[in-house]
Image (cartoon, rainbow, N blue to C red; front, side, top):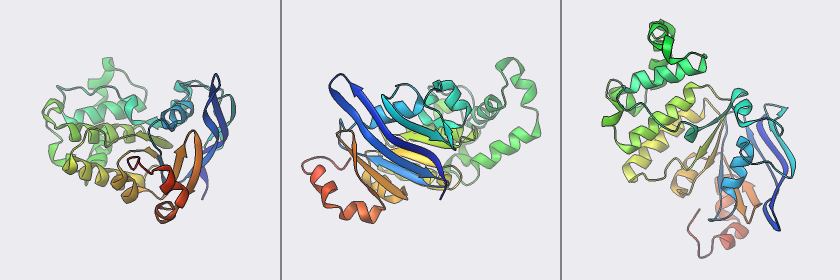
Length: 249
């Protein structure tokens, strides 16, 4: 399995604190790799280094075989690094379909001044329909985003991220703030998407992690203490000890 994302011996220090302690992990083509760990384990710090918001002290980050350590966050996005919460807002007065059309247009390098004209292109609408196909939002395509439930908006953000055709998608706690029914819907949305795009999932909801992950890495005090299949992580005594007295994430 070729690595789409490869971290090698990544180290990040804040004064005397080693927040990322020689972390190595890979995400392969078509794989959903979950990153879990107790609060304060360093998950957000690690994700921010991958995205270019923090600079590691040492190590390597390779995207599709290219070293990206010295690149800006924008350049990393340009090379295909996607992140769900990069989409900070949706156009509430627009329909689901039109928001997705905007995401496709953004990928093609358009702008708002020519948006109406470009949206006449059949290829863009065809791509929007393909993104919606088989999703719970397909029946809500013409609804205003303002009328969607919170979970539906998060599903739309996922689809908009997918519309950018990233080489890999970083998912930072997509289940946060969702009720049980909405979480189940998001799990199904991610299950449908994961065969199309490799994903690195940071998540506290262990039901979602165990349902979706091909592999799991466990981060504790900035160090990966275990990496393996769902079954291997469930059975790992060091993981159990690390979570003793903690919530399962």
